[in-house]
Length: 248
Length: 305
Ligand SMILES: Nc1ncnc2c1ncn2[C@@H]1O[C@H](COP(=O)(O)OP(=O)(O)OP(=O)(O)O)[C@@H](O)[C@H]1O
Ligand SMILES: [Mg+2]
Image (cartoon, rainbow over all chains, first blue to last red; front, top):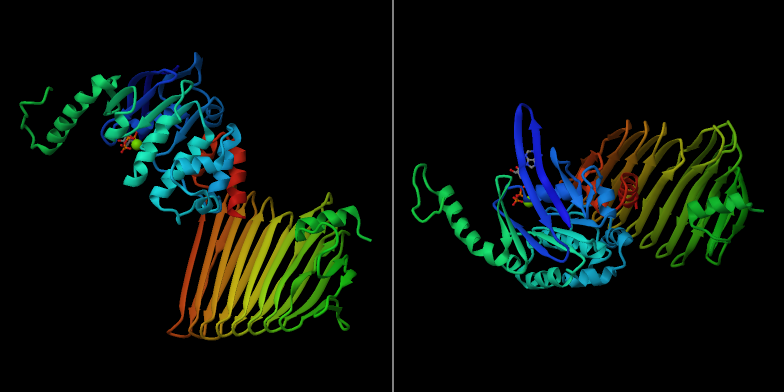
């Protein structure tokens, strides 16, 4: 089990104090798939960064199978089997797709070609490509996902994997996210996509750095649709206007 | 005649295991030690000064290796090589210099190469520099290349200095005639107190001439680098200069590209950038299980490949 316990993340910036994560308590069980959703800026990627060790929480702990890993760095967490496919993948001058996949496979036994094919990229066409600005947004995103598949970590964090992916590849993406998940893995997908939210066991909703809802997909999905409508109306409405059908 | 050390250095600078294929000349501690010509590819020592003449006949294909080894301390070697690639020939020329300085004196090699790539010929030229040695003496390399690329000819210069050279001043002068193409790839890494300076002047003399200079470098420690690529167009030519450097520790880098057009049909572009290794690149590779040092190493070696 992966546990986030009373997690707080506060950034101090020139007399400003920004609370990015506010008392997050979450438990992720082996074999389950989770979706983390919520409006832009609600703190979803920050949760992923804290799990991966990219950001250190101001308060709280990260516990993996009973071991407190809060003080571990990024590399050590990768060695413990945590992996993260970034929302905005880095580009590298000089490194090729095959170089990145080979680095990723140091911790696994996957085949590089297979991982590219699974996400709809032809290995002949992409293995030798440089990971620089010559790759399109959707291509670099798919390579990022292929890299995580190649790394094959136990805890898999996908940050908006659908972003920039075309309609034709989207089905394939949903398939591979599902079929690569096993009873020994925890898959956490940050997403706004209905198709992905429909696939998971549990849904977590964040707003303003807090968890506002969590539970089984069947329970949460109808509530999300409702609250999304309210949030939209609240932001669009003029001050003081209240919508009668909004539960809060 | 070649020792195990010589062979190791040859492997570093010329990727040679055993005797080179094709024509070659091996120069060691200011002496030519082994040489072979091939039909249509003549390698001959100069009579009036140190160095060799390489003459490739029309339409010949082949490879020529001309490595230089310096394994004594206190050596100062100055050599003049003239290279003539005949019309329509297609040649791979592997130069390069490896220094193993065992003592406290300076070991220095200054090579002057004058190259003619005649009409319609193709030349791929690679020059690798490498230094090592247990001594405290400096390892100094000052290569000077003058190249003329004639009508419709193509030349590619790959100039690499990755390890162990203390001081280097590299000068490259190129003239390109009509429809001639030149590509210069420069890769440089300096560390500790090392200094490197590269001056490149490319003149686009004929209509349809084109040149591209791509220079990538990494400066570590308190080393110092200066780049001065200049591209001058007197014709309807196209040129592109690209200098890209990673700076680390307390190193300094100056990058001064210049483009100069004397013809309104010329198209010249320059780009130059100096920056640290991007944090997001480090983080990505660490997420894949590399340590900070390994991530840095992967990024640098990829960048200089
Ligand atoms: N370094 C920083 N300095 C200031 N604010 C930051 C910093 N990093 C993150 N934030 C803020 O923290 C909040 C949460 O960011 P985060 O990236 O976790 O959001 P998100 O839910 O992933 O959003 P999105 O759906 O747009 O990806 C945002 O309001 C963001 O502006
Ligand atoms: Mg995000």
